[in-house]
Image 1 (cartoon, rainbow, N blue to C red):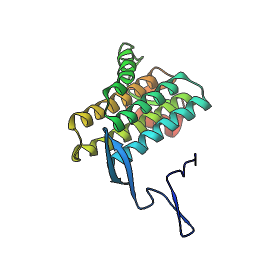
Image 2: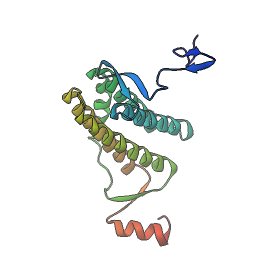
Image 3: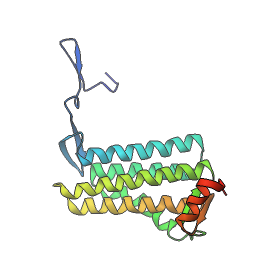
Image 4: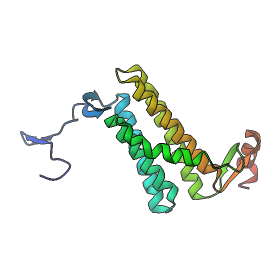
Length: 189
């Protein structure tokens, strides 16, 4: 059998698959473990999958290279979570290092002015969610240095996406009051 049900069994006329009972068998930082599906490691894998899928959607719908890079960075971080192999962090660090050399026009509260920038903002929010989920791994029996490295890389991914936003078609406000006033009454700038 060569489909997604390859590890499932037919028992008394029903199909039974691993994971049906609320647990998943996964690899986390190179260790094979059985975890509840609400475990932070499983949740983080899902958040990274979601971030990658949204970036790939942006690549197909909008076609901008930023989405290709974000999808690749996210896939690398998810693979690092599974393997614990620092090799997977290299491409992420290379992109971050290059981005640090570019100055934004200005910083502050913002409103995206096009679909690309709006989707980048959604990806930024998803990266922040993934980072907050990764912090929950600090309470687990996982290699603390690997968890800290992953948290740091997720924080930098969030900053990278924010950096792309400020380099894109965005209206920046000096204070939140101006942003709210624009959203409520004046429309988009």
